Image (cartoon, rainbow, N blue to C red):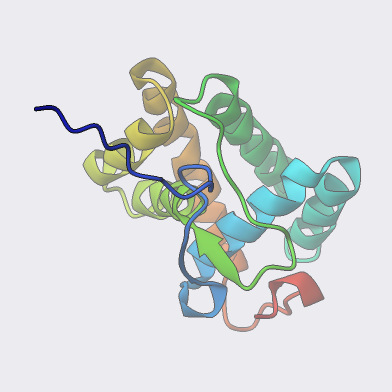
Length: 159
């Protein structure tokens, strides 16, 4: 006797399932998720990220921060294990991949390279993961400064 049964899996792409709300994320992680979303929207989103960073940093520091973020995304998106899933810019929740990306940045900024590497390895292959963790440290430290309580947040970061 044989029984054949194939369970039906949800149609969602792995990594997109909601795991929390943006309101519950600390500043660095929230900024990482929202900047990721904006950046991936294209040129207008990238300009919005650059404008936001420029409100807090002088021109050279803003350019450095935006360029490092661009470097990080180039590494993360160049050779992912699978396509990186994201929610829309106006969505109040965040998915598993977005959470992993944000936590990689936060762990890197905190100097916890082992945790940062563990997060990175879920998104990309080992060679790229190591490189991403190196770049994520600079990005995370800048995001820490941008997340100061006295920093005026643009509308898309108010959740």
